[in-house]
Structures are given as C-alpha cells and as structure tokens.
Length: 280
Ligand code: PLP
Image (cartoon, rainbow, N blue to C red; front, top):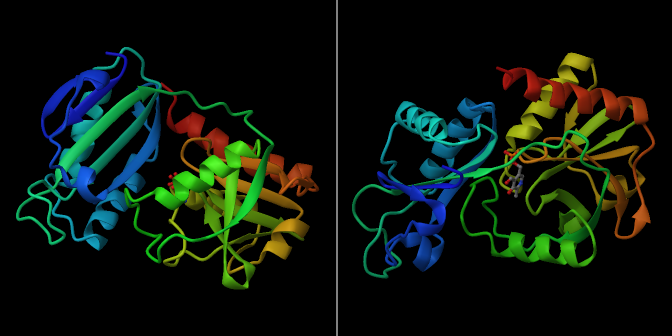
C-alpha cells in the first residue's frame, strides 16, 4: 500500500477512507494529534511522540480507546503493510461522535492514522521566515486539532516566500512558529522559549537540547524577544518533519548565519542521531 488510512479498526487506501460526519473532528476540530517520520520501517522517536499524544489527550480530557503499547503495536503493524518504509506517520484521536452539542459525548475517542510517503532531506535550508503576532489560544502545549491561526500564519509565510512564521506575544516575546519551535544561538549559548502553555513541547526541540548537552553547549530555557531573534548569531527551527533547519532571513532582512561551525555541529548531532536510530 502507498497511502494508508485507518479509522477505528478499518483500514484502506487513504483517498478511499471515509469517516462519519458526526465525528467531533468535523463539528469542533475536537481532538489532538501527533506525527513523526519513519525510515526503513523504524518509527523515529516513537516513545516520545506517543507519550506526548497521551499527555495532550489527558489535558483535553479525551478518553483514549487504546493503551500506549496497543497504539505502538498498531502503528508498527500498519507501517509493516506499506510498500516503502520511508513515511510520515500521523495519528489523531477525536472526542468520539454524536449529535452536535458542545458538551462531551459519552465513551471513548475515535482513533485515526494516516501513513504517507516522506523522506527527510538532511540538507534542507537555510530558510527565510516572517514574524507574526501570536493570536492563538493559551493552551499551545496541547497538540490540538484546532489549528486555524497556525494554518493562516503558515499561508502568510508561504505568500511571503518563506518557510515559517515566527510568533511573538505582547512584549515582543518570541514563542514558537506555525508548525515548528524556534531557538537562537548567542555567544555560544542556545536560548529557547520555556516549555510552558505558550509553546508546544517539540520532540525535535528536546532532541536539540539533548544534542547541546552532548556537545557542551549551554542551554537557557527562558523567554527572549524579537530584538534578540534579529540580533542572534544563529536562528534554528526544529520540527519532526525537518528536524533542524537554519534560518537566514527574518521579515526580508538577513539574520543569523554567523556561527557556521556551531550550527554545523548541532545540525550533524541531530541529523546523525536520526539516521543512526533508523538504520537497518
Ligand atoms: N510547534 C508547533 C505549533 C507545531 O505544530 C509543531 C509540530 O507540529 C512543533 C512546534 C514541533 O514539534 P515536534 O518537534 O514534536 O514536531
């Protein structure tokens, strides 16, 4: 199979799979999701992603229809049915189904999985970015399906010929991006927004911090501003899709790109870990 869809036990070609219109995803975008790369049939950072998926569901008070182990076994089984082992593994749980009513329905959530071909390009970047006011809601640490502000920000970035939109809150405090986390290097230290309600605790972010630990690069998990971003030695964007990407322009002006060796060391540490964990 090239593109697979799974919904509550049903499996089929993604384009042919259907879901009931009364699924809470259709009424309210009422669900949470997670996603990661798979290479050579090895799902990368699976434990970390499944842990976060269950944390998001618990914060959203969604009753999981499977245990963590059952989900991992299911994902591995589905991956094993694919023609290629290089995939994007996406899954979501929605708050069941029923008549349109804001209050919760009884029972367990609906589990969806999609598998589509994808390969990491380790040479991706450097990229340009724009900055945008962060108008998202407060619970950005929940990996919610409600992505309207992120979708609009991502489109604004695309229209500006950029890869990402970097969000800031009042006081010009940089939070994260439409679908990535953002970090800066200044005077040899990595600064990254703290993992509070204003950012998603990215798995790639955690891997970048761990790589800093291995390389002896100090890490400060503290708020920083747009001014800090514009004056940074390096700007790094992380996500499970592209892992570790360098930023070269912000709002049309050159930015970062001043610490080639440090960026190269961090980039290699993150990318090499991905390739070594997903080798045959
Ligand atoms: N921040 C937001 C808003 C995201 O949507 C994502 C990924 O989808 C990330 C950060 C990066 O998270 P991860 O590294 O787990 O992919």
